Amino acid sequence: MKNNIDIKSLAQSTFELEAANVLALSEKIDSDFVEVIEKILTLKGRVILTGIGKSAIIAQKIVATLNSTGTPAIFMHAADAIHGDLGIIQKDDLIIAISKSGNTPEIKVLVPYLKQTGNILVAMVGNQESFLAEQADYILDTSITREACPNNLAPTTSTTVQLAMGDAIAVCLQTKRQFTDQDFAKYHPGGALGKQLYLKVSDLSDHNGVPMVAADANIRSVLISITEFRLGATVVIENENILGIITDGDIRRMLGKYEDVSGLQAKDIMSLNPKTIDKTELAANALHLMRQNSISQLVVTDEGKYAGIIHLQDILKEGII
Image (cartoon, rainbow, N blue to C red; front, top):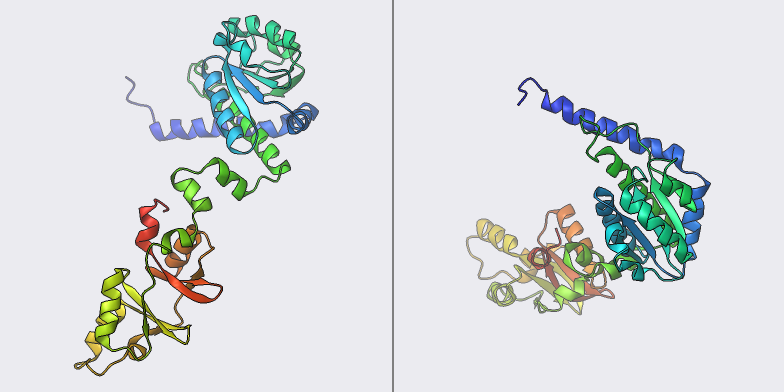
């Protein structure tokens, strides 16, 4: 083990090398790239991605990104393809083969079979003089200056560049298709990400009840309302209009201010102009508003009328953070 290596400098040089090669991709976006995007946009079938080794792993990630952004895609391992998995390919599919060298034995065996299917073959390849590049209908140039690996052997820079090229394809397709956040939500219904995109305020507040008191309600009634619904607050209503809100904090401030609270009414201790949110808004927007104002509750409205309360804990329980 070498003890005189500057670890910090080594990590920084890795980032610099990989970043420089990714940035160099800008100069390699040519008519082939544009035509591949146009072909995929009008594709009746799917995008099939294939590769071997580390390139296969990158292919799987690109497949996941395409599927989640509106482009049907499927992964086919290059080694498995010639042992039955070629059946994955349908007549309207487009194939993207990923390889650094373009000359691996598996690729050389697979490509002739891919050509026999009559499908469009796109090579995402680092060697422009390779067997794969020569056989492909379109070439996406992912050549690099060198690997970040000290021995220039382990796929490091090359896989980073392949990944960036895949992201560029996905972003171009997503943008051309005008794929919105609502479309994105359809493909991400689970987990915190999905909930940020589809969970509405009403999905949470409707389960909380509607705590309220009249403006002339005594303090005992206020406390009962806050305690009954366990939301840390109750809303002061008059003629169906929201006058204010009384929170646990307002109760504590009241006790610190008044020696005798027996004659006080809700209107005497309420906070005016409470923050509100319509029930059709996203719960993620409610969280943003709470953080912005350093509060734990929002008054929920339905077309301007009081409809309940959403609490910070409601949102946190759903994993939206």
